[in-house]
Image 1 (tube, rainbow, N blue to C red):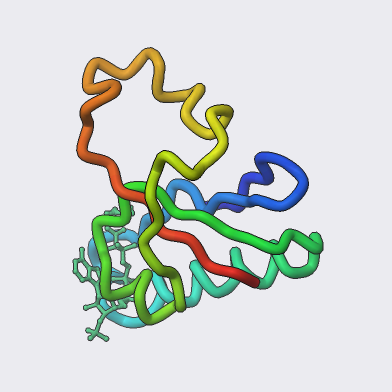
Image 2 (tube, protein in one colour):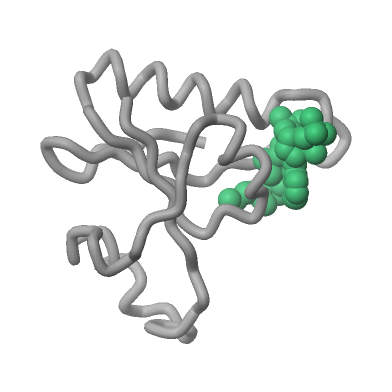
Length: 97
Ligand SMILES: CC(C)(COP(=O)(O)OP(=O)(O)OC[C@H]1O[C@@H](n2cnc3c(N)ncnc32)[C@H](O)[C@@H]1OP(=O)(O)O)[C@@H](O)C(=O)NCCC(=O)NCCS
């Protein structure tokens, strides 16, 4: 898991994963909060998660769903080589820090 800074005002929580044997004990939420703390420390005003498979976790952390069309095109540059692009059904959630 890491926080990736895309541009001046936006960072992304990426590659969130907890080993199977440790899941369900609050580690996922702690990792998300650690990323948000890091983004705040960097002075980034907004943080994003894409394709959240765990909506409860995102919702509890304070993220809300956003229209993908409002996100900068640069965010999607890594998707261009994906066989599912552009209709992968991916969703995006955002939080104001
Ligand atoms: C998603 C993941 C990171 C969650 O980690 P975790 O340590 O189990 O999460 P937490 O224990 O902090 O759970 C926080 C809440 O989210 C819920 N939740 C966690 N994973 C969920 C899932 N896959 N679907 C729905 N809800 C989920 C938990 O039930 C918990 O709610 P509760 O307190 O009411 O039980 C972990 O399941 C994982 O690594 N999954 C495989 C990789 C993956 O899907 N990554 C996410 C990409 S968006």
